[in-house]
Image: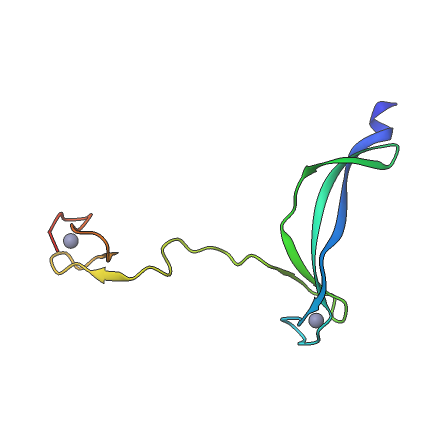
Length: 103
Ligand SMILES: [Zn+2]
Ligand SMILES: [Zn+2]
């Protein structure tokens, strides 16, 4: 049976062998790891089919912490308030995108 010998299997590897301080317990026992999914035949991983996101795995508290923070669009941009309609717009804008008032 083909489906018994071939399949997608997760494979976790350590990206950075330098231990980092754990964000949860503070001990320097967290390693940066990544779980890739491999296409395996006869239980031998052949090639990666899906590359995972890096995460921090702590050996002490066994907590997993994803390295990448959730991205908030426009969070770090400086916003200014339109004097006409009172809505927030980006500082670089010369015109308000809501009411069209020039800055
Ligand atoms: Zn920890
Ligand atoms: Zn406006």
